[in-house]
Length: 378
Image (cartoon, rainbow, N blue to C red; front, side, top):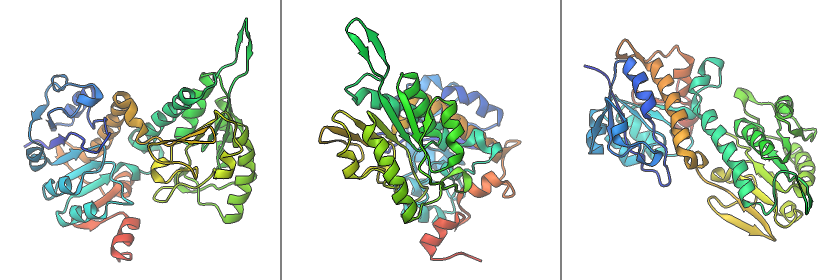
């Protein structure tokens, strides 16, 4: 009997993405799996049920979970949805391992194997599986458009009969995947772009996109492509230099985040008060507390004429292309799990081992296990 791969409709508020798009169905067919999908799952992303040729459309989500060997998702399942997963089944998607303790305990109770896309190691062979990067690139692009849309100023320089309009200055803080895409997009829109990252290795990347790298004298190279947390002295030094650049910018886009921890505060209220009226701050770290003290997730805050906006689930705003990229990430991951039409979990594979959250009644992700069980298992 073929492995049954199921795709439920996302239930998280505001989520418009879907874990499977029609163009990826044929690729899944090559793995020899049977595909089940909840009716309407792709509707918000622009894909009707009829577009999924060869897929069995199921009306009731309960039956979908009951019959599935593997469940593909975008957002983590709710506790109720986690309880519907069949014992011994596999669930793959973003799992928010740093929160949702009741959901994780439900996985272990029912011996569900869960793989978290945000835990996929950033190694060369896993690049095609790196959903964090694919979705972050979309968020960075959208952030630049949001900044341009909210700004009362033109981004490009314009020479007209009425005179010359000077280009806007955009400062991007954080030169990871999202930040680099924001730099590239703001540059294409005609702005003068500056960028800063605590990882000095990003200087060449910033400059290759036409941006000017801001030097603060602080470097915080970390593991896995992420930045380490700064010391108090480093934070102070960074803040003083950045504050001057923030104050002069027409638009600021912040993308700095530390996995599993609150977003670092990089822009305080005093700095915002130094900004010119009409300036804009787009805070992509809003959902983990924000890089700006004034950020409120999902809200536009007007502070002395400066707009501080912390959008939520930015990738979902471009749900069609975001879904296409994410579905390919999932397919490439699933190809590691399914061999010759059978589900095979090779724990010697670093991608599987590192991204596994729970398996066979145990929590495999060490930080999550320590948080829930109070220590490492021998």
